[in-house]
Length: 209
Image 1 (cartoon, one colour):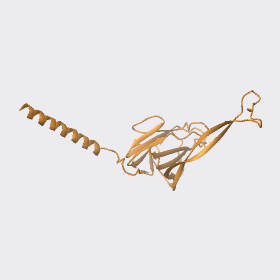
Image 2 (cartoon, rainbow, N blue to C red):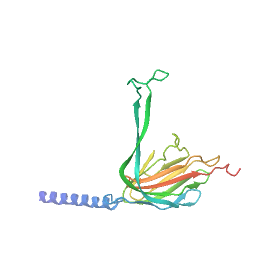
Image 3 (cartoon, one colour):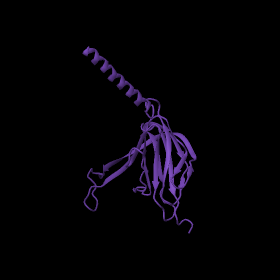
Image 4 (tube, rainbow, N blue to C red):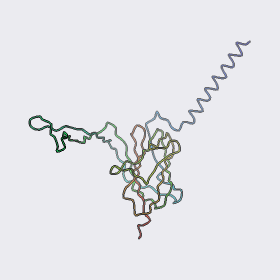
């Protein structure tokens, strides 16, 4: 009798585990086994300034281009190292560019000019894949210090998610004239085969002076 009881109890535990697994599958935000897709709502919602309509600029297939720095120590005609006025060997640095094997579907949108006040914005997206939304790249070696992105799951310099989600960003108040730098916000699938590129600038309070 005890063996029968244990057998029934074990069956119930297994059944509960299977049910829990089915619930997890149902709550999965996307089917990551399919070809990755990614699209945005084309409407940016702000906390204080209303909605902003995105306008598509172009859509094309593109190949990622990377680079690395190659350093060579210079030698003269006799094979000796070239020495500068400080007694150091002269090193020549070249930038070598190369194309990756990944072809991405790139969708770019026209520049969005944001108002001068500090504000918070959000963009909803639909996807069946994992995706990334890194911080805008540096301009002339400097961070774009008026634009900050985030999402509901991960903070810091890399915003990540999976399936349908939201990318948010906030801008600081611009007391001067229109920003000299443009914030480029990329949103891409984790395998880099789908890329959406957004560009933002911000008006200044002194533009009309």
